[in-house]
Amino acid sequence: MGEYASSQMSIGIGSEVYKKSIEKIAQATADNCKMAHPGTVGYGENLWANSWAMDNLTEAVTGAPLSWWSEKDDCPILANNLQVTPEVFDKCGHMTPMAWSHTTQIGCGIQLCPAQDWCAGWNPPCYNTTLISCNYYNPTNDAGNTLIYDKGNPCSKDSDCDYYANSKCDTSCGLCKAPLNATDPHKQPKN
Image (cartoon, rainbow, N blue to C red; front, side):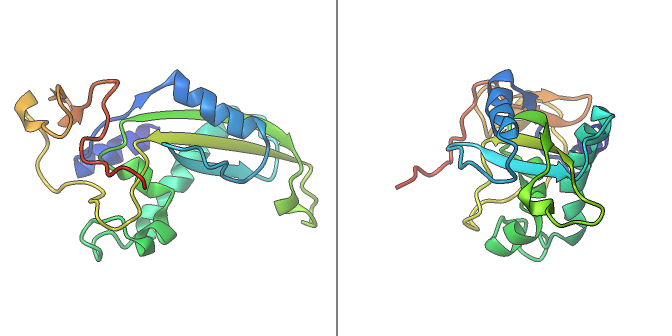
């Protein structure tokens, strides 16, 4: 996650807090051993699977976010004025919740699983898989009306951090830190 954190700082987006309550949701998805989104309401989700059981879980835990973050190289966010549009979401839907400035909390789960339908018939055969699920709060808005992140300078004082009430500026990295229970004040209610 270190490379991911340094990428966040280079584009000046907020920091995230790891939450055990969100980890439980992600772990339940991973425990299901299915490469399918369960539709958890209120959270964004990334899934990643490898076609072998990894002996080194560190390799899986670092491989998943690096794989998701690598979508940035093909992501048309600049052509879309930094907005999450359907085109952006289609090409880099795993990267956007990692970069989205309104993602404030994350939790992940990992599970070693038996062979899956998606790797049936492979040569050599797929006998085991490693599945990782990460959930994000606030989920990315793919309606095309929300910026992935705001252009600007790193924060230098708390008053620079005005999106979430009571946010604090971490001057060591220039990122705004939202309170643990922050909710997006600009989120549109679902109909």
